[in-house]
Image (cartoon, rainbow, N blue to C red):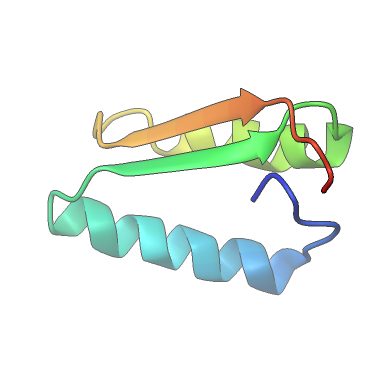
Length: 67
């Protein structure tokens, strides 16, 4: 997600459903976002907090470079 310029509540809903399905199937998920983009940080920190209990979801802020 680190190169994503924008997403809305529909995107978040789809992402939460995807994560829920993965956790139900015991599939580990790693999400990467651009830590320099405040709006991405807010969304992904909330997603990380929502999924702390399973241990299957990792959320990482990275420095994205535009190519």
